[in-house]
Image (tube, rainbow, N blue to C red; front, side, top):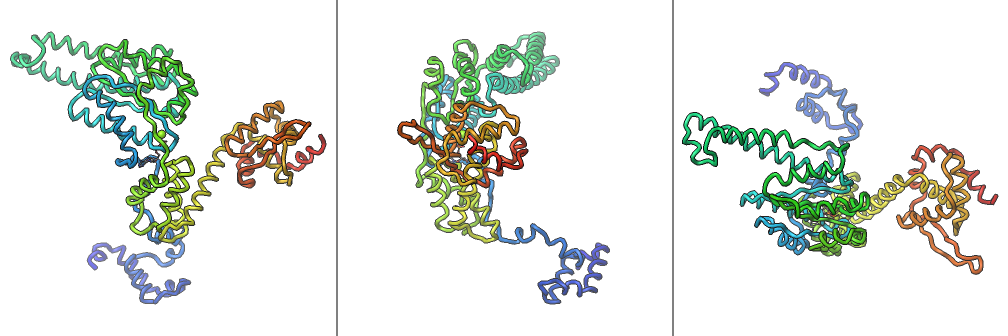
Length: 512
Ligand code: ADP
Ligand code: MG
């Protein structure tokens, strides 16, 4: 063992280990004595720590992992092949190729429900467009903005302005470097100017001064604080600094309009009439098919020059998408035959959502991994479906406004006390008592009825209108989500968590 000879420490450990085989024998699994000694010789481990260090992760680590590359199943991964989106991708490319010819492409609106591949396709097209523009050295740039994150006119314009300011700085730096180089050559040998646009060293000096001024002028826009006009003109000047075609992709554009109206789109869509050097084209991506109803007609017609629809995937298409990803994500035989078809079938019911299909597949894999078996089975997919559904409910409930939480809590209390055919009046009575207990404002019964309808739309409760003959109509309310888990989420809210004894509130319904 040449290694041990080099290292006196390891030698010493080995000797100790060989000298104390008894410790190894005391192990519950009672391994062969020879094995113990050999093991210790190999690792140089101190026996006494062996059992203690065998912890939480050892068993998990030892199991043959199911995944080859789990990242491929995560939403952050952008695939390079998008089966069943060839038509949409080609349509986008046919419209955007204009930019590579130096002209302004029509604005495009892309519609489709979540998980239909809009973002993945748009990013794919934008990467191709930029690569090609570099290849042919045409000035064409794509800017992608996610309006769910960047959701006000100020932020959209500021983000765009800063991106172009940064690009301009790079252009300016490069130009300064070239000119400084030219100047120093020209000082030594004036012929150096002959192949340039300058006829004297002074002219180069002047150009350099202008560039320095430009560099100063392009000041970064702060993320708050300026008047919007100023942010807009910063962006305008930055884009127009030199000739180029700019495609602005506004993903989740419906969120922007919902939150901040259509001013941003109005301003962006009328820019071309004023730009001198550059041209802007907008590609909006929306999950909401009807969002243009909220737009100013001028914006609507300008933005929707071209429209591309992303239809939901059917189960067969989802299978193809999953199979392509699974080949990379999982070890060779990790999936039993039914896994992909079942994930595809579940996700097809969920309006053909590829994101859900991939989530299901990844979660099923993780559940199998947790069970320490080396194959994902149909049952893991079913468990994954339940888990994802529950996670969704928990997230929706957790982010409800306090008033809705109180209403939901009232419904849960009634159900837990065996009340059937719960009506709005009963919910309202308990709601009122709960509000008083935690010092919350008490809304009118009418508002509470509205909140119940909202909970219905979110799929948390089910409210059906029933006729009570001459007593008019009422709603019968029942819970559509698991009681215990939902209650736990509600009680994790610090305000509702303060109520210790709920029984008196349920009692109250009989008092009215
Ligand atoms: P959307 O933007 O329409 O909500 P995404 O483009 O974000 O949907 O797609 C959701 C998930 O499904 C992403 O992980 C994406 O990579 C994947 N995906 C969607 N369509 C396809 C497809 N045709 N091929 C491969 N993966 C896809
Ligand atoms: Mg998207």
